[in-house]
Image (cartoon, rainbow, N blue to C red; front, side, top):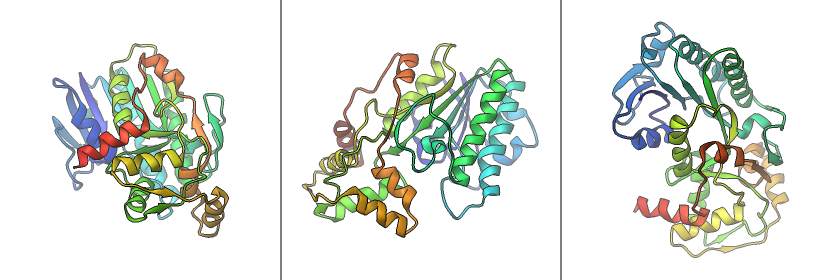
Length: 304
């Protein structure tokens, strides 16, 4: 199998490339001036993809992990170029080269930063910022092109992805747990979906070899909702730290988030939103087996 991977030097991409089975021929699309992705058979500069279709020759599947991450410092135009234009170019090249499958890493953010409840196939898309709109626009392009061509498009909408070296909000949470002997998450028990990096990598690999009838939008998580309280307890146990939990109302964090213009970050940790991932497990004939506590213990054991 020959696979074209984008975002191979990123957090998810690095782990995915390292997981590929022997015999998989990997072409990595990335900016040449960035850190090289691990173990690609060939590296192609992103700019080349807009000038030539050679990179897609002989490709069986595309795993599109690249994108401009969520940040207020980027403009709407920057998000559109990185997350929409590149996706549109890649999928059109894939159709022209008769690629069989296109796997796109999306996010539950397409439902808005303040989404609540259980997200499922019938839940309307409701992007509330430029980043979310760019992800939703990319999804729409993929679905429209897939609908009129013989291309299996698999869109994976993921919640917060965690692991030892995870960036942004998860890293901040781990650092907090390392430093504070008493944690403020005692009442943070709202059901919340999270996704371990190890589970996501397993899903990506299984999507590569899944039957022909896997296509469309799927939600992916650890198999069952958790909570911020449970996640923080599991991290502490993984770090072999004893941490007490103070019963501070979640509404306090939400108020602080609103005052500091950090509501989306607060919601990504405390918000009561989970996903319906059963359709994905049925399609893959697999589901995560380990608990969040077991996953965190394994993650931090590897760090040592």
